[in-house]
Image (cartoon, rainbow, N blue to C red; front, top):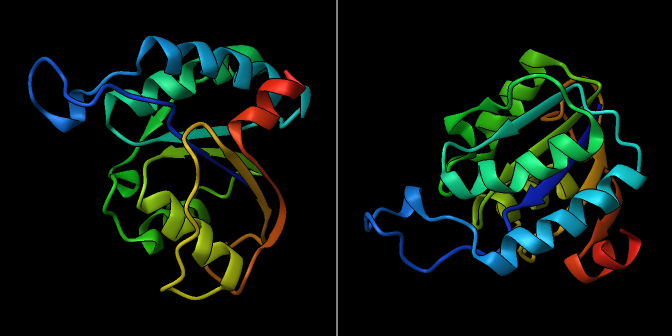
Length: 163
């Protein structure tokens, strides 16, 4: 299984409703995601699943990528990608769904904990991801079993240059 982790792009500090879940991408964040989406397309990821957190900014981050790569299914929303979720929950969901290639779109600190969990095979390591950065791992059919192989980590400036 190929697991791509994408942290959401720059979002507003406070939403008009005052709720964290409603924070939207800034104009700069949306612009960056268009460039990042072009770069992801050039990697030919072949996603058969895109999983996103229920927060607005995750959907707004995933949509340009889905469009760029020609992903035709609905984005799959899961509470296992909320900012403070346990990384084991998303790993269990991935094992159950068993995609060949998946894009996982979420937030810090969860994405950093998930990155660390995949990298080390154990809980407790957090690798901070920059906003709009992409990491790719190759795992077995159950990503919770042992460490995954890190294929790459691309910060947004590198992705923009690739796009």
